[in-house]
Image (cartoon, rainbow, N blue to C red; front, side, top):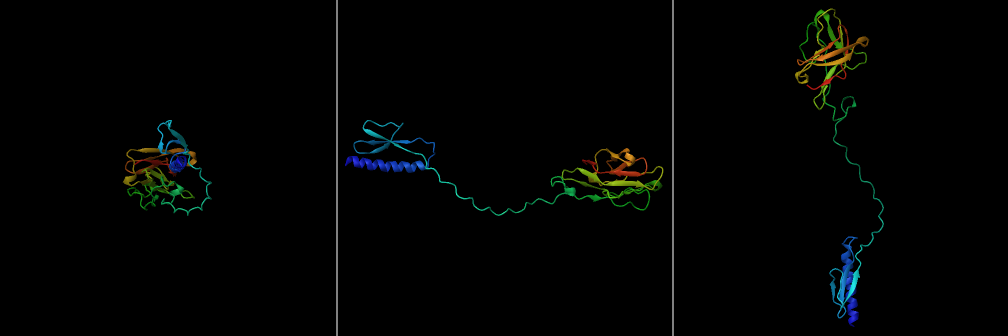
Length: 222
């Protein structure tokens, strides 16, 4: 009868420790129980050692293996579009695109007029500036998000003779450099000329006479 009671207690302890094992890691070592031979009383062995009057029991603590994974569920709905703005001018990246281009207005009718910002100038001896046209970009300027000023388009100086050649146009105060900036350009007949941008806002192509001044690619920090 005593042995039967001890066997029952051993079975109960085995199930109890087996349940405990499910919550533990696979890497945990088996637990050791000591059952008294006299009455079957159980205790958890320290260091895995039992007394001579006890029977040592090893309880497996390995977690049961999971079953196979189920079928993949259906895909969720597509997310909403991002909040990014439209592409910048000429498909420039959004982090580079800045304000819209400010076009340079047509020159006034009178000669010697060069004091209005964002307007083509006229000089002495009938010199005048205008957009070159012929499929080329019209003249304008703009700032990107980092504050860099960009010029664009092709300007043409025409109509005069001799001296009195004016600046092409004047930039507004917020678009002017702190010092004179000079940029090389290719003028008529593949001649190398240059454009100067002054702290007073004057954009002055030095052509030596009538001709065209391509401004694309001129950029500077004001």
